Length: 334
Image 1: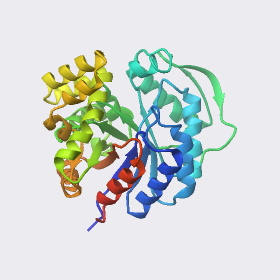
Image 2: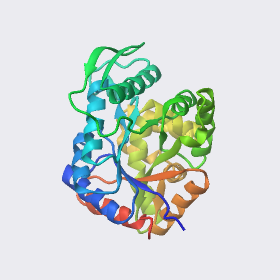
Image 3: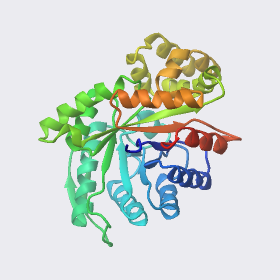
Image 4: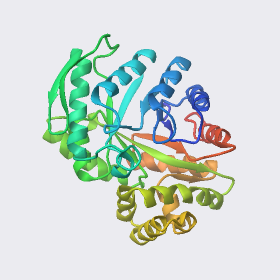
């Protein structure tokens, strides 16, 4: 019987050396992939380069890299660099990020996110394939950029993040995989239907697009404690990011999503966390005891999720221990 495939993702809370140590542990325990976000957690490509030199088998990916905060050439060169250092184990996860981050936190313009993702994928693939690119699109203009090195692989897998139908269809048209996040167990099947629409439109086979999802993960001695520890993370995403607020509202929690957003916008972080109901905190990831979390992962698999990726939620003192405990508890050979 084949070992179940599972990944692990880091979205902040650990230092770069701690992330490398956790990825090494994940490889030792049979995880098939490790993914690193950026946000405020450190340069993802630098961290993945360190992971590449410290491991030999595990796939390494970005989850995700924003197409707005780096240029197409810098993304392509970073991807090719990590791919070479890892011996061809890199996956480039791309997405549009969010206006509140790109404009508010980076001070960069944010417009036409779907065309920007589409054109970024096309230009990155062209540069890696041909060694140079000139591109004129709706959002991207490159006169000529050439690589002064030869990539290890001329085609690196590109996974795209998406939440709603229009972008999900673009994933079907262009992506090697889809990265979901904050997904209920019903989300993979709904997403797969939209991915299939885009794939067929492009003359592709829908089954060639892998469906993956980051699964926020909190493991505690009791389910009640785990839910309590998950609340602040759900509140931050639902309160700060309009798209995640909509996602959670459409997942069956419209009243809670509205209450969280109102509290967050009023500066009441504690109130926003209190507004997260138990059912919401438990519906968008794997939350509970170690055994309960393993059972939740299997329910996601049964619902059509090809690649579950646990994303432990921990900050401050004891964060590395919490990550390591989650990695051990959810290991495929457990």
